[in-house]
Each structure stands twice: as C-alpha cells, then as structure tokens.
Amino acid sequence: MLHYSPTDRFYETNQYAIPPGKARFDNEVGILDDSLIFAISSHSCKPGILVNQIMEACPLSLITVVLITRWSDLMNHNDYMQIALDELHAGVKSGLNPVGSIIVRHKDGEIIGRGRNLVPIHNDPTAHAEVTAIRQACDHSGMPKLTDCTLYTTLEPCPMCCWAILTAGIEQLVLGARLTVIKKVNYGDYTVENLVAMTNANITITTGIREEECTRLRSAWELR
Image 1 (cartoon, rainbow, N blue to C red):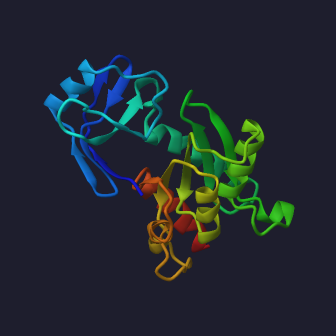
Image 2: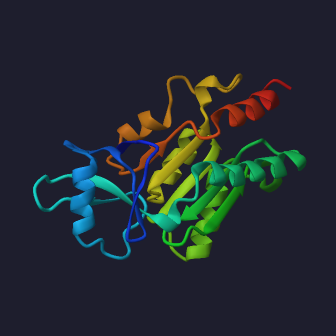
C-alpha cells in the first residue's frame, strides 16, 4: 500500500505537477526537494504518466520513488467530492441512504461511474453506492478492471465495498466521513486501512476530504 504525505505546493514541469513531500513504497522512501525536482526536470517525463503511478524519478543519484501527477488531472479533491455529494443529495431526495460515490478516470479526468445506495430500489443488498459506481464504470470501460481510476465516496466503504474496490484494481480511494465517527453504524474495529493491510493491494487512501460536511449529513440521517 502506498502512503503519501504531500505538501500544499506544486512544481509544474512540462505539463506535469510534482507535489513535494514524502513517498513510501514497501521499504523505499523518497523526499522531494528542490534538487530532486531539478533532476526530474532535467530528465524526460514520458507522456502517459498517470495519477499515483510510481516511477523512478531521479536516475542520476538517489533511487527514489515519488508520485508524478499530470497537471491537467489536478482538479481539486474537494471538487470531485462535491460531485459525490451531489449524488448523495439526489439520493436523499429519492428517499435513499445518504451516500454518494463517483469514479474518475486518470487519463482525462472523466467521471465514468456514479453511484447512490440503490438497495431498496433493486432489492439488492450489494447495491451500495460504491458498487453501483463500479458497475457503471466497468460498463463504460468495457473492462472488469479500473486500474487507471480514483473512487471518491462520501462515506468510508463497508468491508464488502472495500473488497470490490480492491478487486477492481482502483488505484486511489478518497474518503469523506469515517464509519468510526458515525452514530449507529458499528463495524467494530474495521477500517479500510485494516482491510487493505490484509492484502497486497497497491492503493492510495486519502482521507479528510470534505469530512466535516460528509459526517454531518450522514450523522443527521442516522439520528432521525
């Protein structure tokens, strides 16, 4: 599992954005600083580098793993989470459980899957928002794998949905509310991080995106 701690600064290099910070993959740790940015700038950035794709960024001296993100893909996490929140609100208007999910394709930033909790509509206990979004994205792509994608969801996925995300090969999971702080939702000690740690899945988990808003909306529904 990839752990990444970016700062709030970005370097732009040939239409690529390089977030300074730490990246760790297995036992390798890299620190992005100005000298390393220069080394990356001096080295050719090959076209087709995708969000969260790990590459050897500095072949000159340090062997380091970093994240290279296409500048065009830097639509703010908050913006994408707002679209997931739009799905949540649309579902609530229809009397559905308040969860919204979207799946974004990295190469062009297109939203290829949207999901709401459709369990009562389809009488299908697996039709959670994340699974619904995965099904739509797979139909859109014509493939059972979504390795070039990020899933945004307003609520931490349950174990079933988290496993579906891992099975689909999704590269990044971005969360709003956490299950541990939502009243009346009890999964014991479960977190998505705990489940991922049981596997060899290579997925980046980003938390805290619109967390307060997502938590407030879900908690209000749970306390009805």
